[in-house]
Length: 333
Image (cartoon, rainbow, N blue to C red; front, top):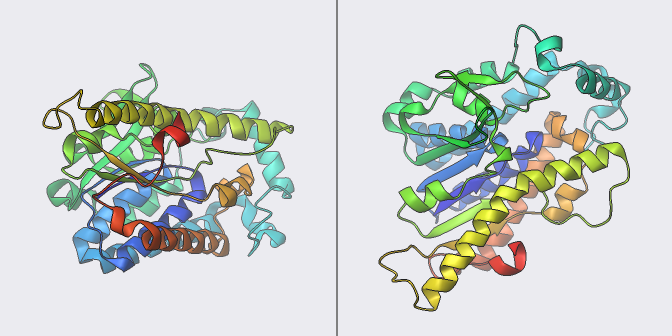
């Protein structure tokens, strides 16, 4: 199978849990991964863990990575001084005056102003956790990381010899938080704007017909947002899901033509799409929780991801290689 991993800040710990449960189960081999933002971090760590020690090595690598994220936040985040954030799984940072102040600053100043030295703790974490030179030489899976070219608005897929720390940071470059990442004279922002994540590399370059999408951004969120923060959050969710929805529509169209016999199966590839997600869980989390790197909070998301992946395996494992386990038209059209 192939995996498609969405981004979403610290909510990426949900994906960690999904990956941990799939690796623990061990019945499904991973041929390729396409990923964006936090998904790109999970994907790079997963690939390096597989290279170092197979499934068990990948599980350990993911654990170590997310623990390092939490420890880095303890050292660098100003929110580490807020006592009621520690261990809180529901409030996120919405009740933190420091978060409110930071939110105001981010609306007034760009990262070129409040962070002129372009410091990014994620770079240090990735450098300690992943040997990108080893990945470039013998990556055990097809790995595709998505970023947005700022000037052209086009998607850039980093893979093979292009894999590096900067590629991951480009994929995760939220433009209000980080300066654009420069690679080979081009500048990049978060890949979620144009591919969250991109499915087409898995269709073109992997033999498998099965793609499992691990969702972080809720597709469905009931009710109309009325606060400024909730409105901006839903705008972001809709934007970051739009590219995926477009690809799903294209896949549904081609699948329909193949099943109707209008296209020869030898000419086009019929894809089987699967989905692991918990819209209810993610919709209940405020936008501020995407910045909450408290270890207890991350572990709670991991555990939810493990639960959802376990339920998916129990219900759909026998359908892998046989059919899609979601109604693509009903979900995305």
